[in-house]
Length: 233
Image 1 (tube, one colour):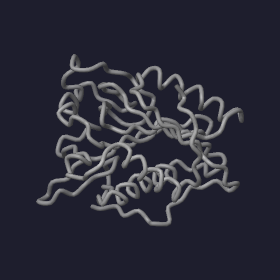
Image 2 (spheres, one colour):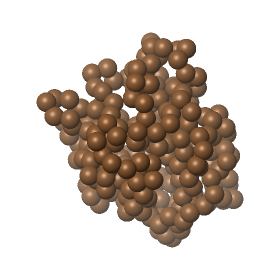
Image 3 (cartoon, one colour):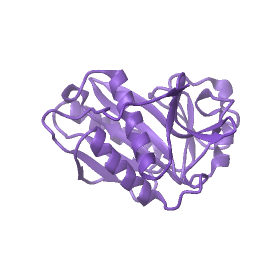
């Protein structure tokens, strides 16, 4: 069943401090990215750094979230496999996919995990709307889905989060124009009955810059103002 998100979903800071918006031009290794993200989360929790959203691409790889089942790794020799502290199961990251690591201080927003996840969902759905794509939620299925008609539903974005001292990390991945065949090495997020799609697969023109612009517009509606900053690496 379609789970509609209210247009009023918001998780903005009371003090309206802007969030850093950092974009890495070159692919970033997974372990290096996680180490940089963990260091930034610790600094945010200690009051030594500001919030930031870090947009990047990874080389082709699979990650196993805390709920991953080993049998869902169908081709373990295809790409490197990394254990991840985020929620969720197996997922793929690679070129053409926009990964957004979201490091927000929920102490300054709302100490509410469900509200935070709902806000991430609203952010992605709003960004897709900017690109003329209708993204939807489904009961019992994490991520953002596209109805292809005829009973076919494909996943276009994944969500996996972790909180430490109420500072968030990990985040979302949006399929812009990845090689969708690379998902065949896993059961994505434990779902066997549904496919995976991308903006390119849906025939939407534009590329990563267009996706980033849509993500930026939607993020400000949900979480508040942004300010461009340097990538973490």
